[in-house]
Length: 277
Image 1 (cartoon, rainbow, N blue to C red):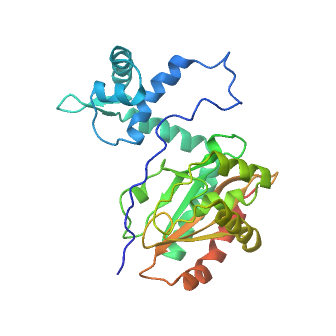
Image 2: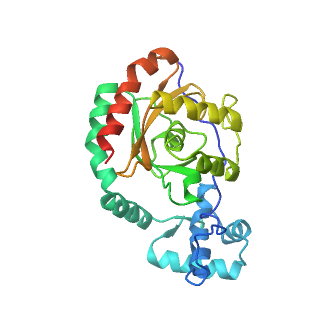
Image 3: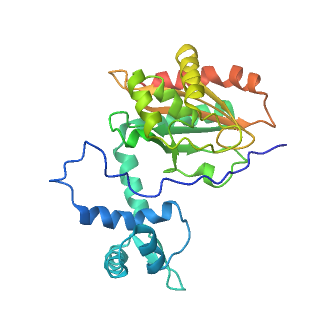
């Protein structure tokens, strides 16, 4: 059986860029942003780090990083290993718990995706999409991930971000946006392929968007993971704005692309419609 292989993909390396025109500089606390950048370094470097390494990545001086780190250590958002290096603290998980409890879509989606997982026997995910924020909509973030028996570690973790243009869920969401907003996403995105089979050229993505608008879902074969088949349908709010997507992912060793689409596309579309307002 061929199993999807995890491909290393560079993560977006900081908190969201502060070039968004929506930011009111009069209300924006740069000191808080610098502190959050210290926590964000682990997104691209998921290993224990020293103060010097964190300072080098953030561009802050070591003294500033030391004060920020000490504050987070006291609050529990950073912890020290036996070697004295820094890692994210367990307190961060509490904030993830708070977010999921406060998100009505995640609450509604949990029983729907649980049933979908039982019916499909494959991995099912819910990705979240912020269509109204010009920078945040460059990515989707996974809020629910229900694994199959053979998933790689990173494919099972909630909170993981992926470029909107590259994922089946992101493309499904893009298809519900006006063309001008799609063009803006493509212009601002780093259209770097994740695998040799990733379709990243703007003309290719526009063709995919047209297919999604016709079919009601997006299909991708080995575009984010070698050996993986994935499809997704967008979840929309009352105004028709996409807020996320329901994903189903399987292995090329178990399904042909045609069989996979025939079997699972109706299930994903039905689940997404059930969750749409």
